[in-house]
Image (cartoon, rainbow, N blue to C red):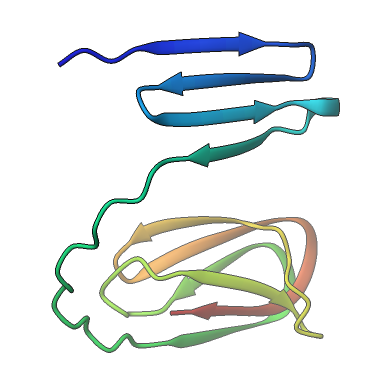
Length: 116
């Protein structure tokens, strides 16, 4: 199999063409934006139905930089971290195992972790 690759560069953006796929990368002021264009093929067959997921809400009553969450869901869930006013916080989430995770924040604050 042979693939042609072309790269076009200017000071703020570069285009990469791989076969019929075009990728444009724009980098103004340290911001990277990637747009991928690819021709659509035919849809495959539908997959099997998924399991109904469980959810868990962790309440962090005491302000802390690190929150330890024991969710016991048996998998690595999505974790949305909010303050007590339900405003979404930027946080690092580390899955310790299938039943627990650790949230690391830049500021000591109470809040919630919504696992799903």
